[in-house]
Amino acid sequence: MTDTGTVFAERDKAKLGADLAAARARISELEEDLARSSSRDPISPDLLTLRGFRTQFELDVRRAERYARPLAIALLDIDGFRHFNLTHGYSAGDLVLGGVGTAIAMATRTNDLACRIGGDEFAILFPETETAGAYDAVGRILVALESLEAGGVQGHSASAGIAILEPAQTPEALLAAAGSALEAARTAGGGQAAVFSSVGEGGIEQGTLAVAHGDVIAALASALGERDRYTGDHSESVVELAAKVGESLSLDAAQIGRLRTAALLHDIGKVGVPDEILHKPGPLDEREWEVMRQHPVIGERIIRAIPGMGAIARAVRHEHERWDGDGYPDGLSGDQIPIEARIVLACDAYHAMVTDRPYREAMSHPAAMAELTANAGTQFDPEVIEALVELLYGRRQSGLAAV
Image (tube, rainbow, N blue to C red; front, side, top):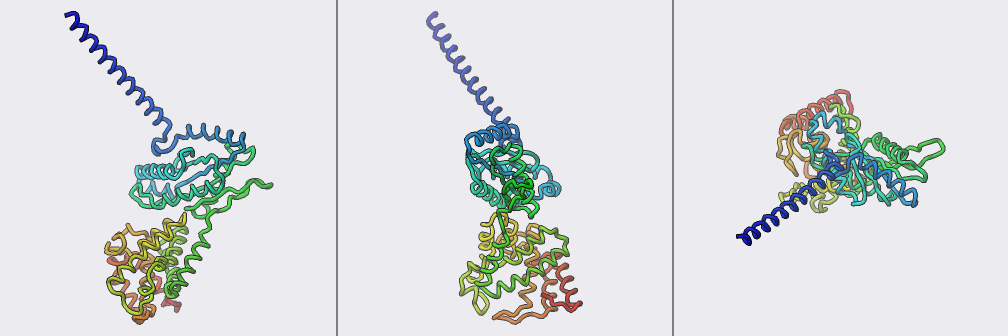
């Protein structure tokens, strides 16, 4: 009996020891989880808290200064976030903040540090990084945000300011320089990055924009004109008409700017359509139409490759969507279609109808107006058609050209 009791006692002791070891392991896991969660932003858990970031930021600035090593910082602000919150609600806004945090984490290196420093503003620290490297990383983030689906909305944009640590510069001065560059990017319309240049004799020199969209847009428009003269001329004719309709609908200045660019480049995807289809003198057959219907998707890919032009890329992709959902390439309907795309579609259709083509004569202005009105609510946004018809009617009454 004694031997048996000893065996049971040893077994109980071993089980107790195993249970204690398991409990200690679980406690250790919980402590690690607690430490990890306390150092992570509660809304953007892929990023550090402001407290954790600030401590490491100051250490990295001192280290870079001591060893004369490069260091860059970027401040990033989500464009129109306050309006987004008011329109979609704060819960949707939190989803966007989390999505932006994930996009930042995915586009940066393991030794880079990032946090949400408040509201919708983020900071990213790039150790051992010069201007070009920081700008490339920020560009990747901006492009990623343009396709981000969060808060019930696909595609978000942000402004960013970048600064490089100067000799004897304090952490506070470095942040201020990045803040100045961020303000320059915001002032220029958002959706782009600005780089702080230097400290001059008169104080802070305004950051210089690192993305110049004007030259890129002009080059794309020129390429389209060289590819197909009619398409290039047609796009230019649609621009002013679309802008006037946008003004009638009370779009803001930034939206009007995007609308103009989308109208100019709405057919840029046709550069990828074979000549025998693009220049065919007669109507296209079904197979040829299938190829032609790919041009909005091709156009989107071309434009989306340019940081800061995600909203324009979306408008180009959806320019052939219909109000009733029977359009292409994605079958969007109603307000799902970007307003810029809805306006370009109507203005594009009007100009195409009143222009001679190799396989048909131009329609008369009254016939084109009747066609627009008849398709309001099916092909076209009724509100856009109302504004367009009023505009065209006013031009005719005043004796101005319709297009």
